[in-house]
Image (cartoon, rainbow, N blue to C red; front, side, top):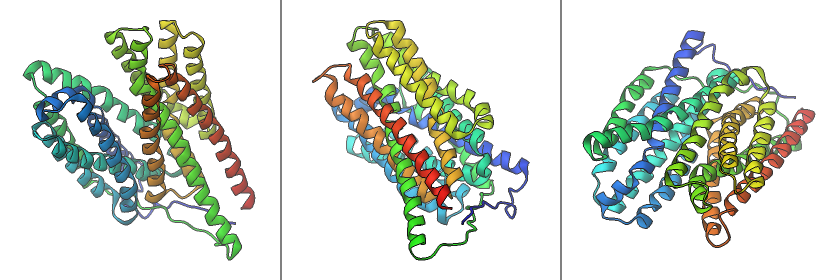
Length: 407
């Protein structure tokens, strides 16, 4: 028999008010993360002009940044197990602000690519930190706070293109857009540097010996692997939908360039709205119930698009439904993991490695088949990914039941 307990009573954030202040700091950091994440797309052509590159050349910065994100997730998770979390997050935000300030003034493509690799590493480190520290702060009650955290990421991602567009209208260039986004991060970084850090969870357990110990270790490692695979499939589906739905709409004649852009906005807007609605739901429903409902909603939304492939209305309904249903999958699975294992920076890092890998592989696969097979490959690959994710969720639930039975 074993139990896992997270102790924070000895911490300077043991009071409810202190925990709320720290939670607000994490939410502000995720607004900043959303601002940086969504800044690259609207400025890509200007960055190509700055570096004298064509779009096919500069498009590789997306892959480079994603690879940096993966590295940051993997390496950063270990840092949070060894260092106070909030000073680390504050420092990473300062480095993000510096990177953002450099991006619009770099005239050489390979240097820009290197800076975006570093920016991706800082983003991955911040993302892992926010998710890990929030679980340490709130324990099993983290559900609604986790959904709020990811909602504020959506707020930042929504505001970033708006800020860029307004600065472009005023100045005619992207330099001040990046500099203003960088300046907005500074007060958040300073605030985090001054806030106390939640302690890592304290595990209290009667440790098994011999074969039982090996079985317990293997069981936990398998659960981490299964959840990482879940994130691989989910994030791959989300990234594919958000990244390819506009191109799909134009290629199938279901919308012109303007309508396709609004369709993408509808997807991300629905995802942000879904995260807002999921905050009270997470306080009332068990994570497994939310996860199952979200996955079914995703599948039904994609099936609407497939059932009426020539109907623009079906595409809009399916897109909004998919965004809304996908909204709480990531934060809720993090909450689910926190209920069944001691969440450390290392374990969260593996979750983000799976997520980052899916975000690179599945959209890339669609790109290989979009023209050679059919634009419909987009929807079919997303459907298959979601079906596999539902099956993976079933495997996770079965494994958790076996862990409980084994004590």
